Image (tube, rainbow, N blue to C red):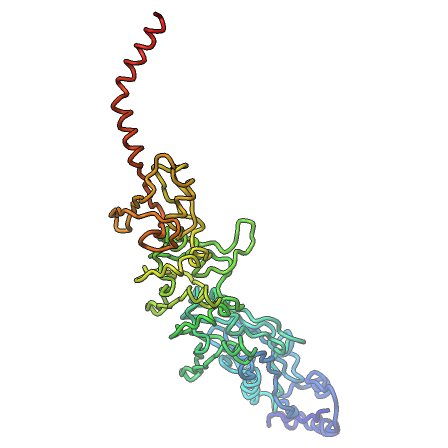
Length: 502
């Protein structure tokens, strides 16, 4: 229900006196009274229309899962619809305007109106004030018809830092702006390729420019989102926001696996390029696939999988002091200690840490080798399945033998069929080993099949070791005698043939 009340310029006072009295009679509450009806009554276009004061509130869009409910902020590219109560000429389809590059709306009568950085309610108030010289107490309502994409910056520990354009989803019932799904921090991180394994989710910052030119810094704790489902941490973004993901000061191995399974982690199908150096059988750079040729997931790429790819550890590897060297976006290399012996002993899966793009796995040599641990290391998944050693000389089946890692010398002899009982020198053998520095070591080892694994009489073998089983004294004498008598053997043979013909 509204009360119509018009005032006219002084020059038109006498001309419209009778019309004014008619208006007075219509000053009782009426509904739906428009300027066109009043023009038909008076036959004159009023210079100013005094309209009822009913507020200038436009509904704010749903804030969604943000830290606080925030109205939509207008900016260049937004398409809005202006409705001025009882002024259809400037409302509805006629009132649709797009915010220009300079952040203004170009409107009839009032020309350029700055609305950039304002909410719908604030912009409606500004437009209402601008129309006040032409319409008394104008009621202005703004409707968001088509929201603009938001330009967001993402920096720090993400796989593809840079600038991104994020679209808003939905405009809500009637296009009022209610129900708009504003892009959030996690969606922006997904667009930027996801976080790296070096990201610190507890100290993420959203840097938001203000109209005054200052910058507001909002702290985000996405770890709280993961642990407790605190959706307030997934802040709704505004145009011009910059998300900064800092580098973690210390890497928590127990949290690393959880980070890799979040919705905003890196692409789980992307191949990973890493390096494995040190005490592995095939050190070097590797590109490890996460998805098979048939499209099946091959699982996470961890330290043990990288070591397996590099041929497994050697017998001299120190699995307690493995290091993962990780480059960061800050340009500083993070060194993360890994203890795979703890994995073997207690099943601590956090030690089998998940690797990231550019990681280098370093396996150092052991300062002291504990032979009592050798059998357990030999059966570990990150040890090679077999190693090749050569057993030559007086054995039943001389040649290359495939044996498990850390196989003892006695076991290798038995794998070659054991000694040739009639020819072998059973008391000792010679062990020839090629060292990593290119030198060759030779030593004589006394053979005692009753001995357990030990470095003196039953050492653990390494890949490409050669065991030489010599001839016994009798076999050596027999072979020497045969060599000496071999020419005479031909004479005796001719003599026997001659006697045959006799």
